[in-house]
Image 1 (cartoon, one colour):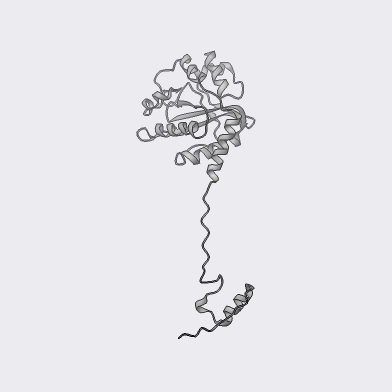
Image 2 (cartoon, one colour):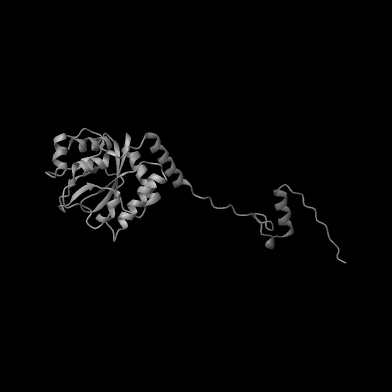
Length: 240
């Protein structure tokens, strides 16, 4: 149990939650919601992928998890089942950031990769796995990504997960460094603002702007050319 608690604190917990409270929660003796923020700062970003038809929620999670690594050069996130309604991705930050900056990052990520998925951009209070989901009686648990699709229907475990196995999943994970987070944020912002400007309309060679030649008199044309600083010269061409 101590090893698991140590890993949870290393990755996600900003404040030193009561050790005994964590033990009761992780053993299923009581289920608590933990606030991952303190004084407007956080070290964790949690993304829900709500249950959908078939395995669509799992496939979407995989797409986003892969994009975090291949497109944004971030370390692999933790993956969990909630015990009832969703898969979750857990991003761990090496240094605390403001909850507003975390919300901005999540909003940009949402816009770039899974805009049609309904998410809570500002949530910081969450039930920390492993724990018992009170409504379903299933266990929330961190999982090996290789077995994720097998849980797409229930999104929870019938039996409590092994504490050492949970700790083993977490100890392989790396926190996002300050430099890596700044790079990912910059990449998402540039992608968000990279809108192609519409091509400028080509000026008409036949019709000067503001003058319709088909309706203009000779006097109108002379006045227009004078306004442009042009002295017109008219020559009569004799036809044979």
